[in-house]
Image: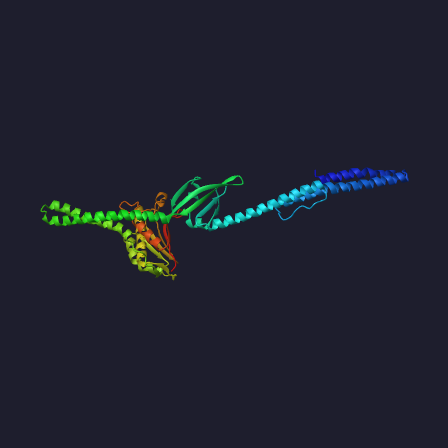
Length: 416
């Protein structure tokens, strides 16, 4: 029971006997005794009021301070009530409240600074709560496009490299911190594609140059010797064998030359061009890649007026042809009724096919030099596409949608 109610009960118990005594004994009581009893009753009321002022009022003041603390009202304070014990408690409370206010200000300042730092950081930052739900993802992490599934598989204190659907290499590190006694994970993600791509390019350029030099020199002498020797051979069967060897040497030289094309890829000559017009100009040739093989071709957005992009038309046509060829081959591998849709919208080009699709294992290795899943593939097509699009500062991705099972190669070009 609260002290206020106890005080009311005490007051009633103190004053009720006096009231009954006055009521029943006033007629038989002497005047002196009556005034004495009246004086004692008034003194009792004064003492009760003094008790209220000295005990219950300070308690109400302290209760108000607890309400301020509960409401996090840091700008108010308790006033002195004239009672030394209560004033001492109020002083300690006000001092504690001031320290809490200062700590709260420092906490909010540091939190604001940390938020600004996270938002402006050039590396991706993703923070999870205790249940593993994402609570913070800064703009750099949004740009990198890492999925929560990739991050959740990463143990604390471990770094791992991921290759995205656009061929970018993202290095992720998992760390943790303690907040209010609970461990929270956070992830740092950095795009290291530039250094990895440069190292890959330097490596395969050296391999290709050495291979092309040795193969071409050997095949040139070999072909020359065979072409000279064949007319001198009278045995028809031996001459046919030498002719097959001569043809194979030419094929091997052509095979090596295709690798050398990636190394000798010229720098793009950027100029303003219309993306719909570029695709429209190659429409007949693109149709010839798939229609004769039973693959339907659909073009969308070629008649729309669009703002010009910045690009090299010769290199971009080569990219478009390679993308469509890959789509046709994917459809033929599946053996189903094939359809390719080429859509242009503003500065974005999307090639969609219903081929065999890209598995999770294959998706992690896309755009890796010399990677291919085709029986007679060389892994050059996507290498060439990546080199050209990176040189154009274009953003691109290649992935199979889980919803509809269609594979989309999407390219977004910079404006002119």
